[in-house]
Length: 554
Image: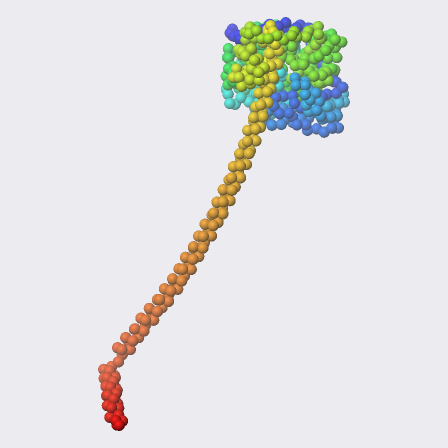
C-alpha cells in the first residue's frame, strides 16, 4: 500500500459538482461561426497561414508555430475563412487578440489523417507530431506538450497524471475519466515512454468514485504493471502540480525548482487523452470537454469545437434570464470573461454562468487585521499578507524576495480573508508588473548591448583603419629604404667595379712595363747608355760654345 503525504494549508469550499455529472458528455453541434484565437498556448502566438476567402477542411492547420515555445492551431471543422483580425478573447486582460473567423459549411469534412505506429516511431518524431497537432496542457496551463516530454536534461522517475480536478463546479475531467479511461491510459503510457519514466501515478480526489473505479478497471484490463491509480483526499488545491506531486510522492518541489529536476513530470488526464488521439489517430486538438454550469437550466459537460462562441454554448445548457456575467474556470481561479461573444479555447475547461443570487457582490474591503489565516491555508507556504503589502506599495523587489513567483493564484487566501481583500488580484498585478519590467529590462539590455557592440565595432574599425594606414606607411618606408639601399649598393658595386678595373689596368701596365724592361738585351742597354752619354757630351759642348761667343764689352 503506497503511503500518501499532505501539503501545507488548503481549504474545503462547497464543490457544486453533482449538478453537472448527472448526464454523460454531450456532443455540441457545429456553431454558426468559429472564432479561433491564434494564441491558445504558452509562448509565441501562431502565425496565420490561410487567407480570407479560403476554404479549409477540418483538421487543416491554419496557424503554424512561431519559434520553439509555440504550438499549431487548426480549423475545428470545414468551412470558409471570413476574417483574420483582432477580436475579444477569453483572457483576464479583456484585450483583443488575433483570431481566424471560420464560417462552417456543415459538411464537417476532414483532411486526410492517419496515426503512426508509436512503438516504431522515434521519440523526436513523436514530439514533432505533438507540436504539429497543437497538443498543449489542457488542465489550464496550456504549455506545449512536446517540450514537456523532452526531459533529456533530467532523468524522470515518476510520471504523475493529474485527475484531481479539485476546483468547485468543474467536472470535465471527471466525466472524461468515466467515459474514456482506456484512451487516457494509452496516452499516459505513451507519455511515460517519451519521458523514459519508471512509473505512472494517477491521482484522483476521493469525491470522484466513479472516475476512480473506471480508471482502476482500465489499468487492470490493460495490464499495466507500472501504473497505479491513487485516491487522494479532497482538499483544495490538491490539483496543483506541486501539491499533487507532494501528495503522491512526498517530494517537496522547492521555490525556483522545477519538478523535472526532482525526477517528476506532471500531465493532466485530458492532455494524455489528446496526445493519444493525436499520435494514434492523427487528430489535432480540435475540441475539448467543457463543463457548462452555474445559472443554467441543465448543467452538463459538452464536447465543444475550439472557437465556438460562448453565447451559443451557454444556450445549449439553457441560459437563465438573470445571468449577469460568465466565469471561465472555477470560482476560485477562474477569470471574468469580457463578453458572451468570446469563444472557447484549449484553456477553457469550464464556463460558469453567474448571477447575483449565485455569486452575490463581495462585501466591502476592510483593512488587513494580520490574522494570518491566509498564511495558514496557503498551499505554497508563503506569507500572503506580506505579499499583499508589497504589491499594494509597488515594492516588487521585496515581493520577489518573498517568493511571489511561487504563488499559484489558487485563491485560498482570499477565500478565508475576514477583511474580504481580493488578495489574488494584488498578486496578479504584481506579477504582471514584474513581468513587464523584466521585459522592458530585457529590451533595454538588448538595446544597450547593440549600442555597445556598435561602439565597439566603430572603434574596432577605426583601430583597424589606423593599423592599415600605419602598415601602409611602414611598407612605403621599408620600400623606400630598400630602394635606397639597393641604389647605394648598386653605386658601391659600380664604384667597386671601376676601382677593380683601375687596379686591373695598373696591374696590367705595371706588368707590361716589367715585361718590356725585362725584354731588353745587354747590347741594347749598352747602346742606350752610349746614346745617353753622347747627348750629355753634346749638351756640355753646346754650353761651352755659348760662353766663347759672348759679345765683346764696350
